[in-house]
Length: 367
Ligand SMILES: [Zn+2]
Image 1: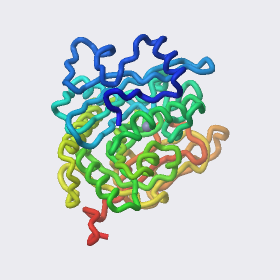
Image 2 (image 1 turned 45 degrees about the vertical axis):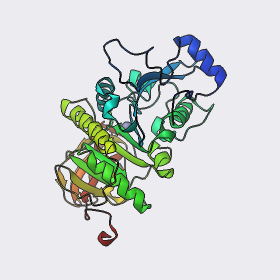
Image 3 (image 1 turned 30 degrees about the vertical axis):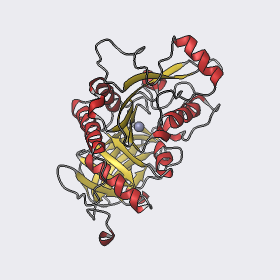
């Protein structure tokens, strides 16, 4: 746990010292003053700080801002966003929450990291402009590795490893569009499955998705799930930022806090209320491009598509006489994801279809 008197972990004492000199006096996680705007009123156990990411080999130095709210004993919840630099709903909603939250509303500890990948956010790119690596494929990270690997390592040691539950706010970014949802993976550990499903349900997003993903290595999700902790990811649309998707992110974050104020896991939680519960059973519900070219979508996220219904086609760029190659839905269901950026290559993910979640809880009797 980060606690009073504890120093945040960086790559080395020497590098941290350099960083302190360059950015002025480093705010201690619980000193709560140096970086705090005058119009923010902090509760007795709220603190704002910046985690320094030192320069090495000429790469730019930067800092990851964070806020910590603590009151009494209880679980630690980490709310994180900005892992990809072209996704904006999470950073906006969590940044606002940092300014509005008071420690008196918290039981236990809440760590908020709205801008996890500042260089990518400033560049407006999914990957880091320094090494072109995807932070969400770089966990658990490498100390003294490539810059993005080192960032992953520092985030993991200082924030992720200290959390009992993590909610990571994403969107489809420039490349993709998701039906706004909270999602979790199929998990073999029954107890973890139940507690994760309970948190995902508590967020009250319009859609909640149980999904089997194929590219889990290096994801933040894998680190958290591998340590037996609760991991929920939000996918809040894609492309341009919108008022509606920011509101979904803000509501999900507040609901998460409310849920952790009453940390009793409700195993009887049911699929009810405004949330639509869907499931992607396996990888075969994903359609990928079989040729290079420009993707033309035929269906929108939220549409119901039949099995073998064309969801789009790819236009070849090198031959005007070739007919576009049509891709068909692998299954009947709701389109929860589609490619948004036109240019694709063989293997690019074009669509994901989901079906209604068959069971409403994870009690033994339901399986
Ligand atoms: Zn993302």
